[in-house]
Length: 418
Image (cartoon, rainbow, N blue to C red):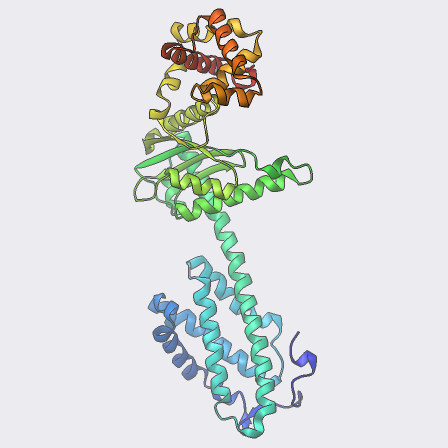
């Protein structure tokens, strides 16, 4: 609520506001001269404005400054804040600057500095008997500053959202073209997004957030919020250069390899922090023309990571060479997958084998996890050896068991595990 609404300002609202024996608007009436001085000040003394192109300072900024000076002068003459439609030009300019990438802080700072200078000119001739009018002018200028800030910020934010949606649509379209092997040259030209010679092709898995399992929460909202956090972090880390096709469960990233930005373990940690769940990624680097094949391979690697119940993290072919080779099929792979068939009727033996291998053959830890005595673990390991000839007391048996479990899981899928 304004001071005027609280009846704290003084002065006759039916007369022109006067300071120093003349209308307060007089120092602002030569808008060309005052605007020129203000813009010179912006260009030399307001640090953020120094980065603006010269033609923008001389053209758009000068024009808006003149308009605002007229707005302020009329406000003092009428003793009332301008109507909402009077800020249309201000909103239009803010939207244009948002699309051109001028920082919001630069715009707001310039408006605040301009209003401060205008108020200084208006009150420079104030005398002791002008206290009431200066208070009224202060009330009006504060209201105007609030209205300007809101108009600029709202318009800027709306335009930024529109630009972000347009950019996201363009990147998704270009990513789809690259992943399908379609011609991308025209799309790149239309969107203004350059196509790199090489990409990190990344398959991403984002597990459900705890809120997505909470019956008290709208799971769709929780999933969308998780995805937006990840997308925001991607934009920051990769400077909006990564092409992404993502859902709340994951998807595909194409990260151009034409600079210093790349997906690393540290970056994945940041994405996990944003998602608030551990994110897993499988990565293959390829030329632009080989992106479709690289994407297939990356997603296959990601499937191997999940099938093997590996910890969340960043994986490449070197981390999954054995597993990947097993998926190539052949009689040897099929034979390995059948080694553990005698255990099909003994789910407790499968559970013990998995826990024992996962715990680096630590029987004490395995027993605690399974809530059994260590002697029970020993008994089950002997039973596995009796039924399958896989002796987990030897290094050869351990390797054989790990490969057989993997081959079996790849053959049957995680859902079929005992």
